[in-house]
Image (cartoon, rainbow, N blue to C red):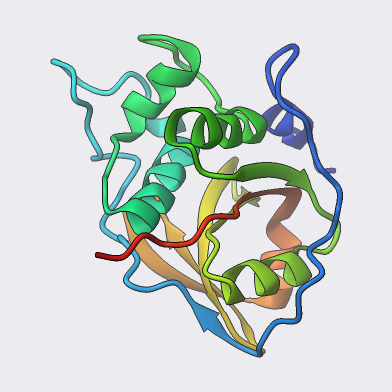
Length: 193
């Protein structure tokens, strides 16, 4: 694991469990989660409370989860409100994969897991083929970052770059070079209607 990744991936003391069972699903050679809410940005997502979000620079995890929840349920929580629900009002600092997955499960009733995964391509292919959102922890130049993976094909992945709210295409090689070993997989299907 790269420097800094261990701290971001860990849960708070006594936090959730990590699971290592692999998906045992066959996957097609491409899949896309659509329509995906690419307009969600960690910098402008806001809050339901008066004032500004507590720490938008570190809201990539909550913004990623907000996008997954909007995709699955049609309801859009604010990133700062997700942070507040997990860590308390006004918390500033990193968010952690285990805590984000636990939030999805306990606050929204959807199955989610944070997983250390040495083979992200297999998990991403299987999950997206079933319509399940995936959030990956990556190393960017100068910072670590959570982003939802919204599509894949033989050449690479498309991710929702929540630092600004846009689509970004990466080859599998570029994605795996940035990947820090943690995925959040929401194993629930989209609610249509």
